[in-house]
Length: 97
Image 1 (cartoon, rainbow, N blue to C red):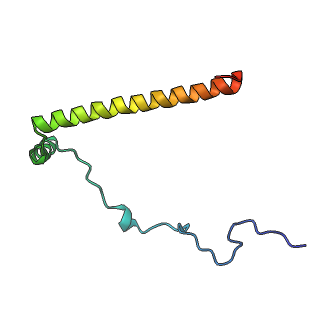
Image 2: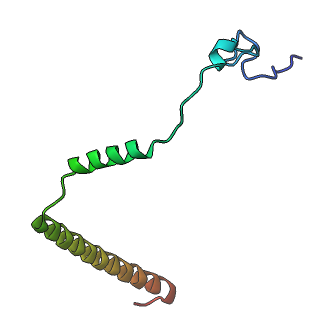
Image 3: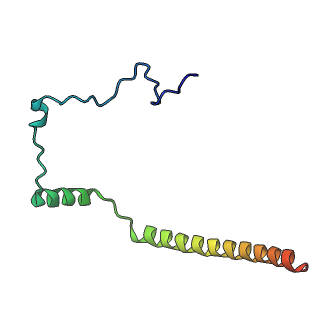
């Protein structure tokens, strides 16, 4: 009777992606510069803010009205669905509408 292999690969030529050998020291000597430059950050923010295209007053009003209209329509839809489902549940449990 044969035993099942312990590893998922069954020992058939699997090579690990992370060998148990150390890397050369030259790779570890590189330093990362993580300094924060507030002045540079502020300059970049201002440069990006100049590129932003802001909507005009008429577009803002139009989009606000559309959002409010869609919210009212969604509210009405879910109210009607709730009423229909409630009516069906009441009919199911009481035997009458």
